[in-house]
Image (cartoon, rainbow over all chains, first blue to last red; front, top):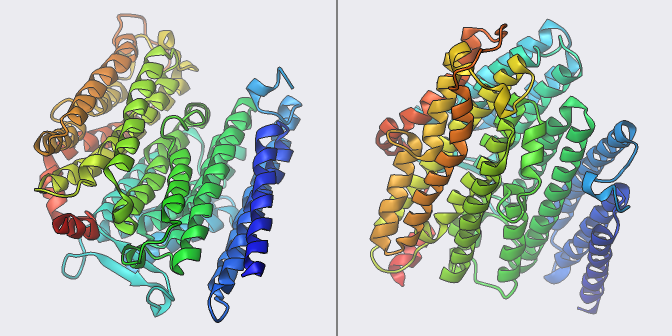
Length: 101
Length: 492
């Protein structure tokens, strides 16, 4: 049970870092990293929740692997778009945030 | 059964073929995949066997071990509507963007993304497993973001990135809810969740999933990404994005609240959803009135129309007493989704054709087009009739059913919203119509042939025809109205 709490707390801390990064950082690459932190935090908790019964439940592992693939594709698309936008406009920020950056 | 598989597999393989092949072969592959998928969608309406809910357990494994796909009335209606919109958008894109494998950057990107979007839509409409739905809406969002960014201008990239930020935030919220649900119940199948023993974390899980899906549906106040995204995409892409993509996350929300966790659908929660819907109707309409570019009017109108869908929650989710009005509200909701999808795609396609001719979608550039391009202007007008909910359109029948349900249930305030929203729609659609019909010298060269103008007209006509055919269509389909809620309703 203490193990599970440890994982849950680690996950919560990661999610917290991610949310902070999402709100406090304007640079789009930092936001992508923030999204990945939140996702990792959720996966840590998800993986730990597999151990709650007598035997370890294998389903969360399968779902986490799928989730990682999804997160990787989304990150790749996001980075691609950010690079393309930076090439066209010279900035990796969203428009109304250009002025005060 | 075969049709269900084809709906998922054929567009996916079509998308891969469109990337791998080049020249005419790519075009042939895209259209073969499109036509087979349309046929599979129609096969669901006219099933070979006895009518009923078609289900498929993948690999022969039943839940909770496996994943089940099911096509109830709601699924079939949305799949057929998607097929019609995709067919129309594909025909329009064939000319305005170029056939697959034979054009530049846009033609290379558009066709695979369109087919991926289609596969993801069908997957979401057929799935009943929360994680399967997560993968479905994620694929849907990624394909949709790609379509927004496709023209490669700085504004389109900015709109696409903003969309992606909202979509990813929505996905993570939803995923958080899924994780909590699995940790509490050990299953993600909606049918099994409905029979679960309630856990403390259910409320938080449902709230997280709802917030995430609201961001993806662009419900007020999470709508800010939608107008720039739908305004930046090329017209055939906007047609798909506006008509279909928000409906996918909405359907998940509907199933979550009514099918998976109906015990959590308290009056207060449903009231909150409906109030957000009312805000969306008012705010979206007011913003639409303030726009000077037609594409943005149509995009803000989507924000308003999404609001209507949420207004129906307290009616279809009502418990206790005489609940006969629920099926009226449900049928009205399905019709509203269908007629909005058909009308909105028709509108975006006509706007795209006018932008081809005049080079702009500013109101003053549209003057006199009613003389120059009567067929597409007629299509736009028919779509406007549906959006404003005037008889005899599908939008009218939908609102009539919902308003009847509202009065019967005693929640007459929702009927006022339906009527008032229609009035606002008439106001924001008046200015473009006035410009189109203005007496003014039309543009000299019309580059859009008559047959191309017929495509949006066909979609708009379908949205009107829904008004006449609604009763017959709804009788043909097994009702998608979830059972568990009705049972708990009778019990209380």
